[in-house]
Length: 297
Image 1 (cartoon, rainbow, N blue to C red):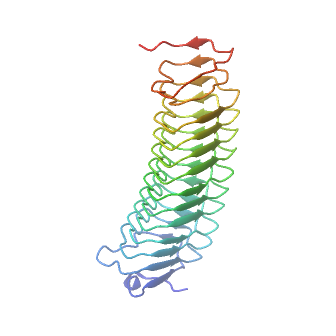
Image 2: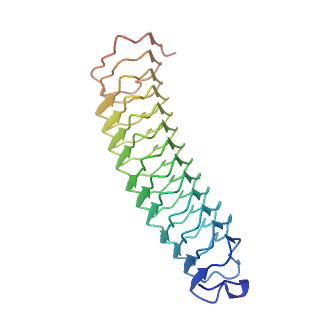
Image 3: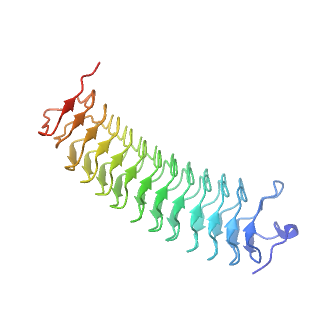
């Protein structure tokens, strides 16, 4: 490994970094000619904005001891195509790779626990995402506006899918929500207009408002046995919806929730306008446990 001194940052096209623990503000705004970076074994963290807006950077390989990628560390690296994550990374901070518009695929390692807000937002060429088994939380807007995203694999230990985490991913077709997920927050998959099928695991308790709103290709929804609350407009403007299977423990459906035919299980409360705009709705079966149906005003 070559120890990088400031005077040699821009001499080579490929850089090897070692012998220090944290990378601070690597980019000199007057020189951005490097293409490939390999992070050395001794480095444990990359500071905020360390490589921000590097226009020539094409690939980054993270060393085995790197634990933290700081806020906006690689934000705006528009030619960055490839990231190889080390096995020890635990935190990908907010906006870490936002606007990396040439990035094609990511495989997030097994020890990452948190994907920060907008960490991969606006990565417009990103097609495939594999989220490792260590991740517990997918942050707000984490993959928002990834307009080429086609496939995601959500790890077995994810508990929370944050607000707008996958909002406006119009090429995303299929999502399987693992049994570990407890909360699908508001607008999590809004405007995923190619999404056709959703299977929501048995640990989910709450589906937030507008969570799947405007998923205009959505046909089939299977909602797990422990979901108790479906928020306002969670499935509104899902104009292709044909089949909805809802678990037996549902207690609340918010207003403007569904748009098209469904057969419903037992509820305690159905709020006004829950089925507004259901132009193709032919039949509803409401269970014996319903206590309140609220009138619209």
